[in-house]
Image 1 (cartoon, rainbow, N blue to C red):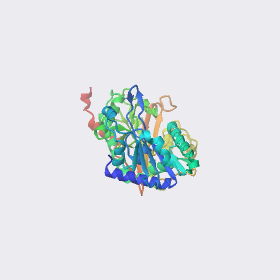
Image 2: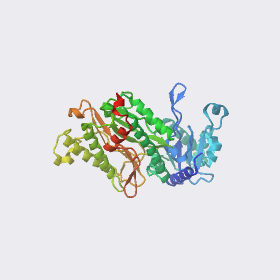
Image 3: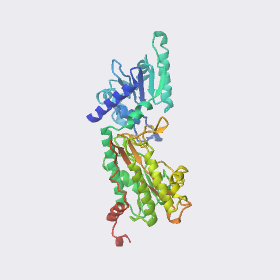
Image 4: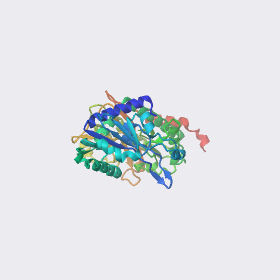
Length: 450
């Protein structure tokens, strides 16, 4: 049962969605299903984000229908009925009773009634909103319900004539985070930041990457965030040059850096933080130079996160700093006077090949368009994005030997505010001196390491 604040938020979301759907429309959303991992074993269930955003209903295989201005209630849920036998094995179900009493449905029906009941909800409506094209099974079911309504044309029943993707409604709505959402994301970022600090304290040469992963997951779980928002990336040495490295199985070597891209999920909201730090607690001169460049680029990008700036402004700010720095370090060639031309020609691309951020929310790569009418959209208060520049010098790169095999990324979760931005993940250290001080305080005396 959701707490009263969440219940109120869910009602507000449904009212806003109903306003956009209009009195001639119907919105249909399907819950996620259980996914088989291997024989008789399922992956941990995670609710579909759009469905959860609008309903809060935590069970699989349900269908939500929003019918604005319907006399007998606008919010209808179809869900699994109570079943003593299955509940003995799998745990309690809410059933249709819980859907109404605990989750605010105006009506609830067992799933096996959906094919006879849902077409009635489509009758004399003009438009159907649903996640068009994301599920073949749902596409087929919607077409079947639509055919049932069309079959009643001689009885004077009109059928919907438009199918519209529900993304147009919910994804723009989800992009602007409410105060409760922002509070949840702050808590998630704090938990993940604490886990990153714990990794810096606990890291030692000779450990394995998966030991850091295990420590991160356990630290988050101990603070109430049982699940991760995505599979953690723990890349030591040259493994950090693989952008989505997830093997996390190599030893951590003295003298290498380790890149940790990991964030917990709390109450269905993601955090996404990356920190890069020396395995032995001290940056080498080459590591220090590259790290300082990435940090300067990130600070410039964060400074560009403010209302009215376009989405691309942080990325462009990072590119200017990175490209200039790569010139100064001799990693790329060119005339600093022609910096704009070098950026346009993507001279940085051998060492920086991804963009500087993405939306963040219920999904780690959250929903919402990045462009409007062919232009980068403007940032607005309530949007949350990541800011994550990096540099990746592959072991076989055409670069000075001291830089080869170094991968660095620094990523923070940033909320757009009315007058600038708030770094939600600021508790995770990223200044060189702060990292070295934290790691030195946790390391045993040198003589006891032999």
